Amino acid sequence: MNGGPEGIRCMLLRGGTSKGAYFLAGDLPAEAAERDALLLRVMGSPDPRQIDGLGGAHPLTSKVAVVSASTDPAADVDYLFLQVGVEKAEVSDRQNCGNILAGVGPFAVERGLVEPGEGRTSVRIRMVNSGDLATATFPTEGGRVVYEGDAEISGVPGTAAPVVIEFPPGSAPLLPTGHARDLVADIPVTCVDNGMPTVLIAADSLGVTGYEDPGDLEEDLALADRLRAIRLEAGKLMGLGDVESATVPKLTLLAPPRDGGAVTTRTFIPVRCHTSIGVLGAASVAAGLRVEGGVGHAVALLPGHGDRLRIEHSTGFLDIEAGVDHGLGGDPPVARRTAVVRTARKIFDGTVFPRPAGAAHHP
Image 1 (cartoon, one colour):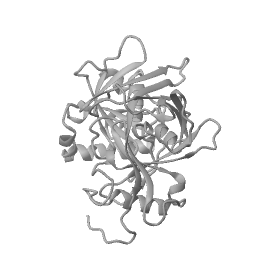
Image 2: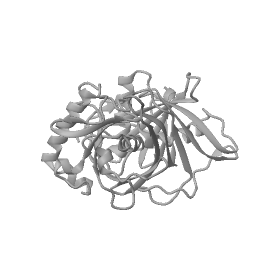
Image 3: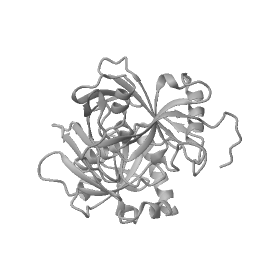
């Protein structure tokens, strides 16, 4: 590990609607348990305020990207996403993060893993958590990443340069249970995986509108109990096993759109309610809406042509292109393509000094 015992080289970037600490793999311990213990100290966990570290007291701002050159000929870099717990001493690698993914290409150029092009640079990324691939394309000029631009995304103030992320069709089944609709904990759902295992649920089937403030939904204890039951049962049906301590599957409540989009969403990640929606979660929602017979197909207002869908959330919207081909002769539907525009911005590049190992910590 580079950086010495006093500090570790780190870059903080906003990726999409999340914020994370980005590290070269060689700057962290190779052994996972030692690495995770260090990252908890870096982020200031466990502590609801994360006052003694980089974390921002919310799962969306307690994220880590670990990046290295890839040995896969189909990729330029490997990206391991780690979700660092806020109030619990947990570090999970059981999911991807498409928002933090938006910063991986720029980070790879900043650290010299990829040579920048003139005008724009494309970085092929292998998402280690799942083995899936993505290509991020963003502006570069004079050998440097250009962060300034006119692209605007909901949930982020101001504008920045666009990062176009395209995902090839994944190898996992779009419908992990093999059905467009399942009855889980007595609630009709659609289980879908287009980059993020997600359970789609009509909000009104749970006695809510789907337009509530995320904080109000989090405080609904009866709803929390029902969502937990759905998640545990759906996890097994989706082949994820016991998901009691896992961060997947995500649960997305669906309601008819109110602002010209295809659908309104409220997503649980998996207990806190997302203030917007993750990129890969939106990719799964968008594909799931197009599944004939699925719960989303009956709720959404789908455009008559084209792949682009606008997914509404509590702080705005996310535009995503998701194409689904429906099989012939009873073959299951498959995702054809998925693409989204995100932005990223470098916040700082320097040395982070983690809380000393063994130091008393009282959340």
